[in-house]
Amino acid sequence: MYAVGWFFLLISSSLTIGFPYLMGQLIGSVGEESVTMGNALSKIDMNNVNTVVLLLFLLFGVQAIFSFFRVIIFTNVTENALKDIRKSAFERLIYMPMDFFNQNKVGELTSRISADILQLQETMRTTIAEFFRQIITVVGSVIFLLVISWKLALIMVATVPVMAIIAVFFGRFIRKLSKQAQDFSAESNSIVEEALMGISNVKSFTNELFILKKYQKSIDEIKSLNVKSGMWRGLFVSFIIFCMTGAIVFIVWQGILMTQGTHPELTSKSFSTFMMFTIMMVAAVGSIPDMYAGIQRSIGATENLMNIIHEKSEKDLLKGIQKPVINGKVNFEKVHFSYPQRKDIEILKGISLSAEENETIALVGSSGAGKSTISSLLLNYYSVDAGAILFDGVNAKDIETEHLRSHIAIVPQEVILFAGSIQENISFGNPNATPEEIKAAAEKANALEFILSFPEGMETQVGDRGIQLSGGQKQRIAIARAVFKDPPILILDEATSQLDTESEILVQEAIDRMMKGRTVFVIAHRLSTIKHASTIYVLDLGRIVEKGSHEELIHKGELYKRLYNMQCKA
Image (cartoon, rainbow, N blue to C red; front, side, top):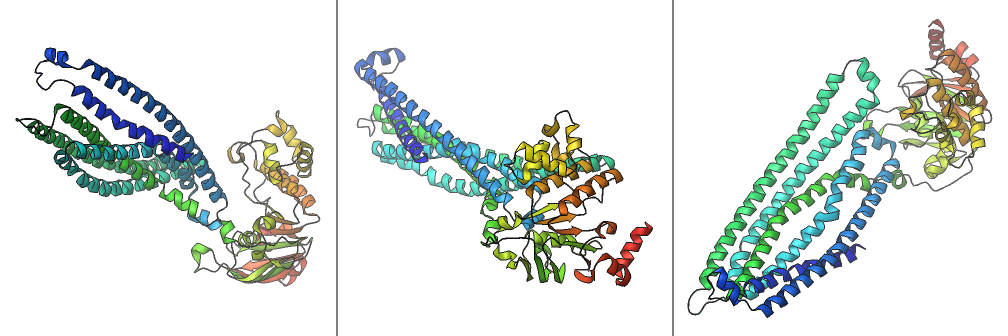
């Protein structure tokens, strides 16, 4: 389709070259002896004029038709291309490994998909087509000029290479400025997103002025870079205009001299045609630098977007293809792990633990001991540095990632709901669920009663990140979502630690109901909630220092007993 558009562009651009030739013939129809407007009109060959005028209108009509189809096709291709780029960029983002999101801010990433892609729109739709149309015009004009008068053509062409070389260096400079401006634009978007997401913290610390100054600094940089870019573009365009207009004056002067004398080198018609071609070529050359700069701006603005699209995703990095039956047996065998951005700090130092099918394993320890890291490794968010994680005897790195994660559900400490209805959030665990199945999952999670108390029931909107629901309500919806997934392995990141007593009782009942018949890993902050765990692993600085049941650790454990007694006193 794009090739068809270029065909229409080539034809319409080629027809443009016929305009100065016919206009030159029309103007040159005046007799060379004519000196006043009155006798000029009397000297015109009307038959020739009528023919030329008819050809001009025919030329305009055909050109208009071809230009119409060219614009329609280019717009269609552009919008389809931008749609594909948006989809491709977002697809790459959601399949990126977790470490990618540790390195990049969400606000900057969303800016790449929105602001950067908009930079491409006008360039792909119009600028590229116009740029090459003007190139065709210049090349065609030069050929005609050489035919009419090679002496004048050489004078004209002598100015073009100089400006072309300057345009190349100028375009690279503009590209660099544009990339810097887009980087600051992405940073400013990140500031806005973080401020609005954490607006309660901003207000509670009365830090509105601090955030505003931070944003002001970022947009000042954007303004400065864009103003600088505009200044250089203005200087360059002014230089081109001066050179072009100077060249026209010089050529007119030379052309007039060539029409003088008893044996003139140029006829009136040839000189008129030459001047029309010269004017059209100068206009084309004058517009090329700004268009070239526009194309360079788009390239510079979208370099980071292209980097995202070409970044390796989980599909590229995680090569597992096996789809074994996973019933819930898990083994960590001497696992060593450091986060990719902190390779010098080892988080897990030879961890070995095992969970049998339908067994409840508790992980306890102080902050930074490695508990949450173990849950991330269970979900294969990261690859281990040494050792292995086995699911029913199969190494996690050999299992297809989606297959593995489809057998694991997590109820986190801080629940994030998606903006939408309660029904949409519960069915996130199974998009093909029926209303009856959603209702049953909500009932198992002790959530149905409060859901039905809302006027809109299941269709109640939860707001951005679930802001319109209480902590206990969000936790129960998260449990319903996990119940709906019905996985053999469940990870509980102390889902009740931030709830009031009444909500905690309801949530704990739902959790106890959900834990039956599954292998459960509980990351425990309140040790009173894990008394009935099959095995408790006590971690300290990335190592397992104690292991056993609650009763065993209370009597023989040191760290566990100390942590438990501290919480009892509190």
